[in-house]
Length: 205
Image (tube, rainbow, N blue to C red; front, side, top):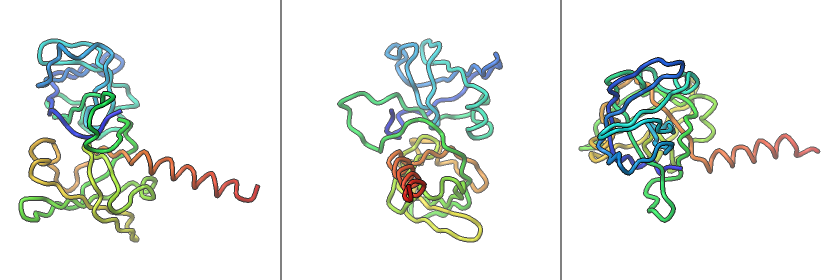
């Protein structure tokens, strides 16, 4: 489990096809304290550390993970939002994040509002029912609060606000229209949606 609070921005040094994709990430984490087999969220995707050294770690990315995450995310030179797995007893500063990417959303507009930025995002149709104003969402591994949701003929769009700290401490400061981002819906919304689906299916039984 994760919280969506990013603690480092890593850079991919090498990306090699070995059946799976072996990705080596340069990081500011103290890798002496990272065990092999540990989980690290890489821009929202939970990955297992398979090798490490001073200032770097490596993960194996399956073809399924590559298909489900943003294009170019695993290429050499790409920057990743990094978060180590949450430990019991730690402060939950964001919200509960599983590290399982549900789909891709597309940035529609970026509008300055003072020093902050309002980001408007087109949601995948299958995830739209799980988005609610003042609810939580994860974009590229970052826990964010949804400010507004609009349903229309062109689909569902939602808006979030990026304060200066979030722009600087994550890769989201570089967002621009047309960019695809990894999205994970709130786990509570997921369970409520499943409960409602089950109720409708079995209400006449």
